[in-house]
Length: 154
Image 1 (cartoon, rainbow, N blue to C red):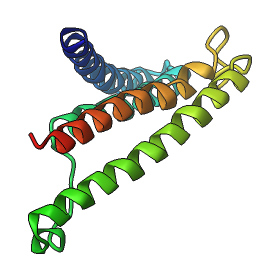
Image 2: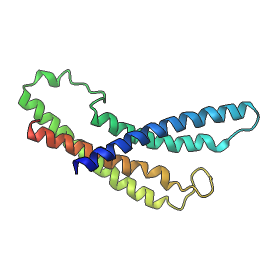
Image 3: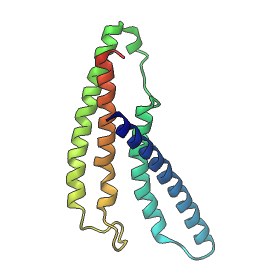
Image 4: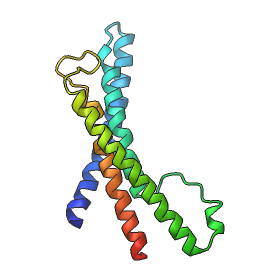
């Protein structure tokens, strides 16, 4: 499982980076096209879709690597045992929220499968809303791994 998870993390990191770059290139190209008098009206809408995917995937990469912002000024004053309990409680709250996000996001993706995204023919709104349950699933896996490490004391 560890090798499969490691490979999935590498793919996730590559997709997160690719969506961010594609979004930037698409917006820049749309700006140049508009400057030349041939606007690409769909470019901003597609970059919105890429932004949704980039946000969730990048959030998981940052969460996994411990690079998310945290305010622990008060928590550092507690003894180590209490700090550990607070981290576990935090992981539980995050997991509960992510389970809700996965459930609601899956339902939302299913209900929007027929709707077109911003009127772009053949492009379902579900592709945008799928970023919620997929990103939530990755974030949940990372949270559970962090909680397991915390419980094992490593």
